[in-house]
Image (cartoon, rainbow, N blue to C red):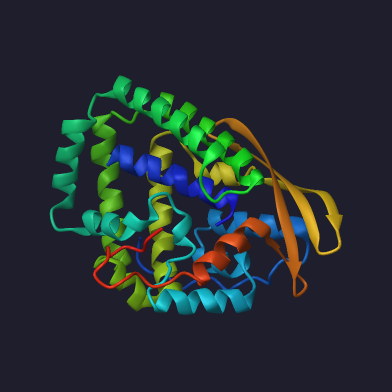
Length: 299
């Protein structure tokens, strides 16, 4: 995913874990791949704002690479672009837990025992996690310099939001948890990694889109309006040299101004984010999990 996509995914996971898709619809028609550097960034933002993960996957990489990723997905070698979600290897188990019979009662019991009323503890935990995340981003991981600079800003915005969000509000948890449970059940993706593989990339992403939308609803209940934040995104050209360019992406996240510089490159007449291509190439070449190994894809 792109930097803005990873930001959206990270914020989604924070609220879901602290607090705790709709009916499947046909995917919208795929818009033409952008032909200008800034358009490439703006299109991906629109896809995320519309919860259209199918279009996102097609706009993020060239057709030939998309076909390789589709094949790798069907062979159980990747779940790109979901691989860029935080803790993506636990996503199937997370869907299973939400979709399980009696999940509302069980998860709410866990929430009541561990999080209810623990606002001070949750704020402290958020600050600690933010510190560790910042240190990790600056020193570890397969990130470019652009990504590291961008993500450090994101972590700061997340931590500041978490300091104010009512994450320990039991009443709010009782209202929002059923939304996530219903969304997980309606994806039809419960059943572990094999279910994702069997459905394939497009059908899985179609089903994840509405769940993504429901999760945004939960975030909004905790004071984080991701659609409004995505609506503030503006891309401007910094420089362009042949088939390579740099684009400045500015947006507001949880009330904080974010500014990132993104490398983009042209392939077959269309522009794509360089970091997104790099991560996708790794996923397309990933080997299948070893026999007898963990059920989730190894990262």
